[in-house]
Amino acid sequence: MVHIKEFAVEQWMDKYETTAKYNVAETCCASISFNDLRELSEDKSDPLDLGIKLTYGAIRGSERLRGNLARLYSDQTPLPSDNVLITAGAIQANFLLLYTLVGPGDHVICHYPTYQQLYSVPESLGAEVSLWKAKEADNWKLDINELKNLIRPNTKMIILNNPQNPTGAVIPQETLKKIVEIARSSSIIVHADEVYRPLYHSVGEGQAPPSLLSLGYEHTVVTGSMSKAYSLAGLRVGWIASRDRSIIEACASARDYTTISVGQLDDAIASYALAPACEPNLIKRNLDLARRNLAILEKFIESHRWACDWVKPRAGTTAFVRFNNQGHPVDDVAFCEQLQAKIGVMFVPGSSCFGEGEDYEGYVRIGYVCETEVLEQAMEALRSFMDEEYRNVPVRRRT
Picture 1: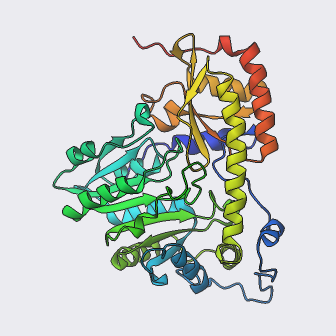
Picture 2: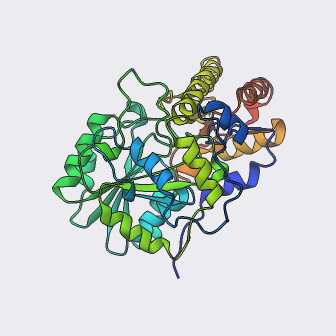
Picture 3: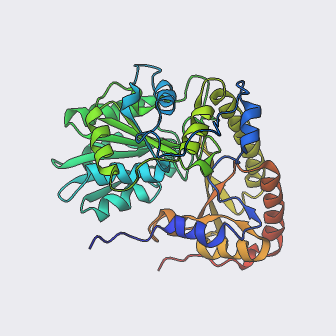
């Protein structure tokens, strides 16, 4: 029987998110309604044909949806729509990709810290996993020399998360090129979970990296979804895209055992949202929201430097903030539990959800691209907690 670790962050979210008064653990940009989407779009037609028969629809995703996605990956070299496979969210896309391509005897290198799925699933499939740790002291940058030292004869895949969850760090284009060069020399597949792309809200003009698919290496594959950057998590639409058609075909074959198709209604709304008449406006809305809310969070952190510190995120929707109490990292699990119980503010504890219980003590992940009013109210409640209750938060003392 396959053994897979409990998915710590998803279990935490399941336990608390429906009862939190101020959910600032959510990683999606503030959700929008169908009416909101139509307001954002320059195309005011109705994307839903209410007369259509609700069959399974296009098994791999409609031509319109896959075509719109292919266009978004064609800034350097055109990507055929047949090189895109639609899935039920990025979580299924990642699982399907790893299930299809990784197995016993393989070695996988995974960017860390990151979404646990990206390293726990390969482990469960019998692969050896090496964690390629980003350096907080160097703004969560990756060391290319460390990657070279991690490569083995049986290395099958390098897994990246760009922008990175939970830190909001960005792997720049030059680093991506070096990763691709290393992978090309040994025909290693490079997979990037790009679910937070293109929310590069705090990088210099012209500094946002391209998709991994734009770097001229056939054995690259990316995943994405409508949830994070596009505010439409309720659609449950994600995708796998690759320059290597054989990867798409292998994933499509394995997918037959898990999903016939995504719903026609979901497909139609996603197609509408990603069309040229809507997608730029939707992304602008979320970039503006991210910048506005990040300034609110930064103001809180700057006024509480006695208790917390961070590397300011440059992209995505999450910040990884370290709290200390009298010179020691707080017990981040106990801290998050107290916040939830006493003031209704929901954070995610870093050590249990991103550090395997050993790394990132004192860290919490904050999802700051929620409704601005929710973030403002959460920060106000947190200020009161810091003044009145914080001294009682337990700390971690290593023996």
